[in-house]
Length: 116
Image (cartoon, rainbow, N blue to C red; front, side, top):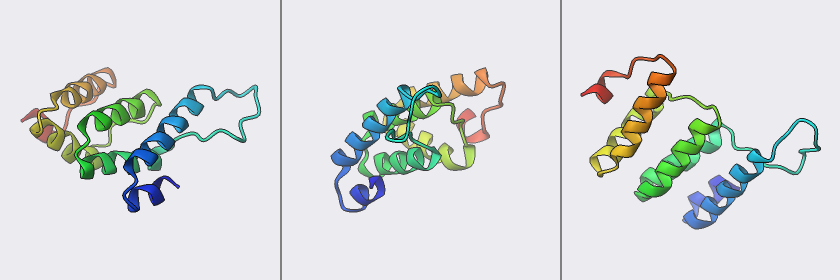
């Protein structure tokens, strides 16, 4: 559904669906019946991040990216370096700082393009 919204130009609807999924995942527990909850996966995050870049929605990009990291998904240099650099060039250095801190906490060396 998320991808259908985005492919048809309904970014705001996709954003609302994503927010609902993020809220559902925060209520996710093993003790309760979770069949009705939608929990974002890596594909969901990749879809939303890509849409934010296309739409140049930098605030939304920052929110989705931070949510992705909070959900335990890690920085994938092959997929995300260009995104971080594009956001940085658009004046959103917060994403670069967030990525740097995330990599430092995970004891990973930042990829060369981020160091430059």
